[in-house]
Structure formats: structure tokens, C-alpha cells
Length: 88
Image (cartoon, rainbow, N blue to C red; front, side, top):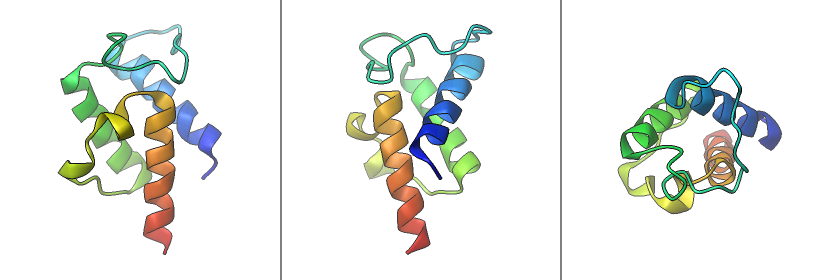
């Protein structure tokens, strides 16, 4: 799956389900979810459940780190990595 498609899916999910915004995701893809107040810790859990269900990957507890889930770009790169991992 293309990284841009993954990012679009993540932005759409956050806007609709966590920000309750009909105007879309209005932040930079590098904006920190936690520092900018975009998504709180409970929202991160919702996002990880969405990613597991939507992309068919398994996220281990040890992988729930800011390096993997603190921006659209980090989350998309992590998701793309996990998708490639499941293919091999």
C-alpha cells in the first residue's frame, strides 16, 4: 500500500473519530499528537485499534511508543513497515 494512502486514511480517521471534525485534519503530518493536543493517550489506543483492524496488522504493546505513534508521518511509516513485515 502506498504511504500517501496510509497517511490519508490516518488523517481521515483522526478527523472523523477523534477530533469530530467535518473539516478534515488541519495539522501538519509531522505535528506531535500529544504535544499539540491532537490526540490524547486514549485516542492513541483508538488509533492503534483502527490501524490493526483497517490494515490487518498486529501491534505489540512494546511497539506503542512515540517513535511509532506520535504523528501522522510516524504512524504511517510504522504501519507501512508492519505491512511489509507481514508479507515476508
